[in-house]
Amino acid sequence: MPRQPAGADAGDDSCTKTRVPHLKTFRPGSSRSGTLFDLSTKKKELSELELRMGRPGFWDDPESARQVVGRLRGLKAIVEPLQSLLDRSGDAATALELLDEEEDAATRDELNKTLQRLESGVDQVELLALLSGPNDARDCYFSIQAGTGGADAQDWAEMMMRMYLRYFERNDFSAEQLALKDGEEAGIQSVDFLVRGPYAYGLLSCEMGVHRMERISPFNAQGKRQTSFAAINVEPEVDDILIEIDWDKDVREDTYRAGGKGGQHVNKTSSAVRLTHLATGIVAQCQNERSQHKNRASARKMLASRLYQMEEAKRNAELAKAYSEKGQIGWGYRIRTYTLQPYQLVKDERTGHKDADVQGVLDGDLQGFIDAELRRRLARRSQDKPAAAASANRGGGTTG
Image (cartoon, rainbow, N blue to C red):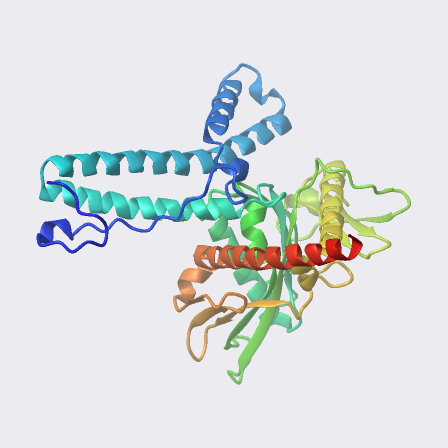
């Protein structure tokens, strides 16, 4: 039975059961396609890395091996969804050919399911296309800082730490805790992680800003509603970018005994390192290693990343909104509100995305918020391009 053109009236109900969804496409070489969709090159690199991992002695250099494994995971995050999309499109084409020859209910039902999976796959690949910034594919430093408000704010910061650790698990990210400062009464005052995984910075940068929680305070005997704040800061790991720092003149180093859980050795020796950049006041610290030398190296990498991010904020209007003059997240840059009482709702202030399943969000179901923010950024870039082009044309006209 021949197929009727899309949108044509059909006398046979069997021809109207399948609706081919509108699938977004990107032209090869377009700005949203870029090198992300160079599938053959990426598959070749993936095969080379897998061969390299199978050679004797690969794990003799742990740092080099870690970088290779990280690159491998990043490539798989691109190649596997794209290959799956191609495979499903092939299945759909085969089913359509079979239906051309003979109408079959089972084949049509399978086609409908394949088209639904295909559209879902296109959405996933489109989100990958949004992660095309120069640092989006990098690992990142992820920090949580409790705001003012005593025990309530520090308890909220710990709740957020649990929420993001759950999100890391869902996305197969690894999170190395670099520093943790416990709260005075409950919760935590701050925590720093080094997060590794495919597009860690690109995804987690969507969470940067101040998160507000409203609830009946468990620390208030009168049961009053309390508003608490905690800030998220995210910086790309930039160990391959040259940041000029005179560590003897530009930075003050303090060593101290690491507190909290870490074993007797950690608490007895001054192995923790805190670095302060004198010109800006930016601080980086690390206490997770027993070796002061290793903690110093990690803190230096973090400080370099924070200085890099501060310089980026001078050139990026979106980042500039988030950062204060001291290179810290400004407490006025609120991005999301989590209402636990008197009703339950999580609402993003930037995108308007909402979720009434507050417990699900606190258990790490954040992808809807991140996807909405990625799309908002894309829409903003699309709006900014014509304005920039018009400004350039006006500039060119005045000089010509």
